[in-house]
Picture 1 (tube, rainbow, N blue to C red):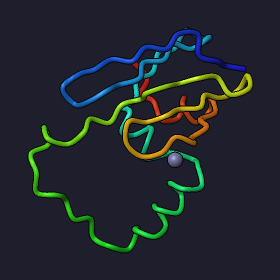
Picture 2 (tube, helix red, strand yellow):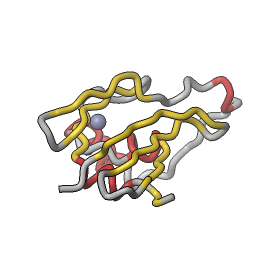
Picture 3 (spheres, rainbow, N blue to C red):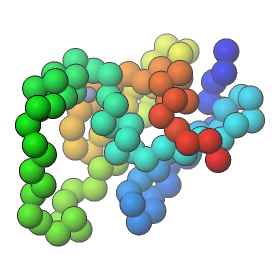
Picture 4 (tube, rainbow, N blue to C red):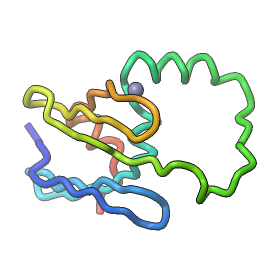
Amino acid sequence: MIMPKKLERIDNELGQVLLIEWTDDVTTSCSVRRIQENCPCANCGEKKGAGSKEPVLLPIVDSGELAPLEIVTMRPAGNYAYAMTFSTGCNQGIYNFDLLRQLGDVQ
Ligand SMILES: [Zn+2]
């Protein structure tokens, strides 16, 4: 089974990025925003379903005033996944390693 062997959170101008080095020596990077948008928990799934037919209205504020989306805590869930808490949004996402690997861009 391919597992993360090193995890790094990096802040760049586009927001926080999660860099993962895997046991097969592949490194992937994934924006925390993309991770949060793909949250598998029931709450986020419902929100996605309910809002999918409505046009997205962007708030008229400077993006600098928005709270940055960040991973606040990340802890192992069993030996196959990580549980993540985000600065905005949910705290119930369990991300298995397969999902994290799929979401990332290979470096
Ligand atoms: Zn969620």
